[in-house]
Image 1: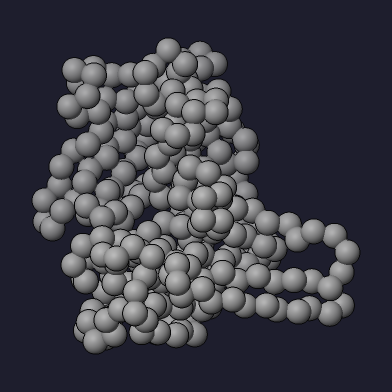
Image 2: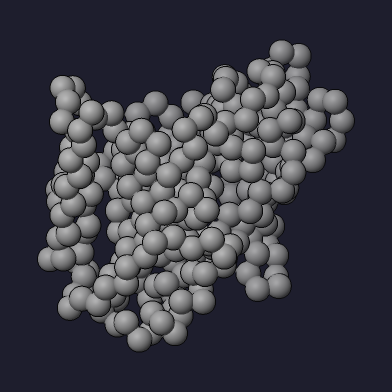
Amino acid sequence: MKYVVIRFIILITGIQVSLTARTQPGNIVKEKFHWGITSQDTVYGYAGVVKSDHILYLSGVTSPGDFPTQVKNVYISQENNLKRFGASFQNVVIENLFTTSIDPMKKYSYIRKPLYRNDFPAASWIGIKELFKPDRMLEVELVAHLPKTDPKIELPQSAWPAQVLAGSWLMNTSRGQTLETWESAGPDKMNCKTYRIIAQDTVLLESIQLAKTGAAINYISTVTGQNGSKPVKITMTSSTNNRYVFENSNHDFPKRIVYDLLSKDIIHAWIDGGGNAKMKRSDFY
């Protein structure tokens, strides 16, 4: 079997596009993801992430702010894109970085290095005149390889998600870290607290309880400063392949909450308006 690899770099838009063409009949199977809303952008014509076979191609990401803020937020965004597919920076094999200011990038490189845990990829840092948005000074794209086997861990298919959720889950965001802790409160209950961590301070964002009532499992959430601090109950409607879906069509928002275990230590959760109301979707990694 012959393979022809074609690579185009389009510096006018600041977007780098990688294509792999196979000299064989049939289409390449692609899974696309575009910043949690749609599978691809049709205005400029690109997808945020393309998964083909076991390879991830992550389009360039930018961020507003001063230079160190841009560096931090760009790598946080790419970290979350990797987690969308159950991966981390340890799966990255190529990093291509485009910047209008090479010297500041050298200075602030220490921000990105811990993410790789001393396992650095092949990399190119390229100085250019401008990026697609005039206030952006940095854009980073990645190529990552996933294990060829399914990274999902095998758990007994049970309606009670204690085996999946128990423990602490940390998410990096541009506003700081978010910590979600789950613990058992008995055979039929689990309690959770969600905090935002900024420097040494913690702020309680949400209290959650999972409770069995007969055959039903309810997700009862109390969000600080919302709904008059009254709890909202959302009922689990499915639990397959380590994905747990909770829905309440009568609630204003969210109408649906999903927890999807992607690997032994990565959870992708999201909330949305249910059905096809993806424009209100928010993702959490």
